[in-house]
Length: 461
Image 1: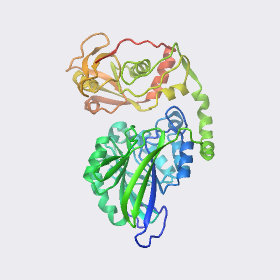
Image 2: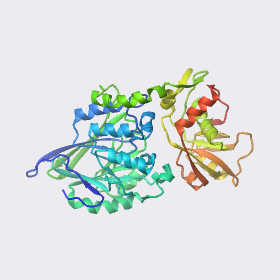
Image 3: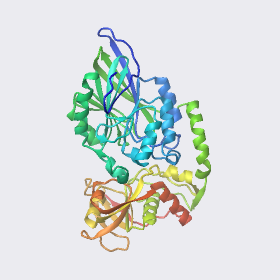
């Protein structure tokens, strides 16, 4: 196989094809594992994943990004446990997701060097060995080119970590890569970490590419999305399931595809992976079992209304930075039961571990963000009409002390989320604090957390 710059040529499995014989190729895929090597609430665990992959015996095992950042066990070791697991499972390629940069360029380089498989991203200009535009595999005699594509939102995840790289438009990245692999491939697929609208744009722009294996959006596609001739697949997040795509070829010509998700719940764990993770678990176990505070009663979370846990997270972010306002996109936060609160419980309740950032925004920009829908807030009192379309759901917003939120005035804001308006702010700063750290320290400082709502969010129909 010929090697040339930025294309990683890999011979995976060779089988001679004589004449126009039917060929069956199996591709399995994951996305947005976010360091969930262990089973837990909403996570299948890598040992269960290994069992299924070894049973199904795919010709290609691919990951669509955001693999190693997001849990205490993975973050503590800067993603090393996840890469160890992926090596044992036998991954063949992974695309760079936006959270692959959370440990900085040097942290990414260490994980790429550790990986026994290539990372790909055709629209990311980064000079690290084992990262290329594409990788070409020989699966059952079919040459498959896997082109990686990364959402430009990577530039918003941790700006200081990506200031020396360039992430170009997704379509331009694909336009550059396709001609370079076409003569060496019988079939081209995209391994992509993109927003759903970017997936669709990509499918429409390149109808000759039959398959997009995607990530970034955590909503699973229980049934594949078909856009023209292109099939888009996505598994969801945290390894709750693994995807399988079956491709049928007549000789070298692709004639059909079908896909499905395989849930990992209840799957017997693979003992080799369990043993691999034991040293990591042992090193963090004492820390995770440390009690940081107490809950005076059961605390609930919500995606659509004010909640005890949502208020706690928003207040924690504002407390750790001292800003006037917190804007935090509501996620499906688990509840906190009455009793002692350990670091392990916090890590389960707060599934994301994004970096905490601050900036100044005008009142008008804040209102525009609030208009998207219910989110966790601190320092504000807001009212929503959820029957209105997205972008127009905000009825009113004022500061917590009752003063009006003036359109022309600037306010200091804390967040972890990449709304477009946030990057229009001024005095942007990365605090170096992670979301889970902020919540843990806030609980520790308060001591006892009380399940009480203060009416900061009102939702009307």
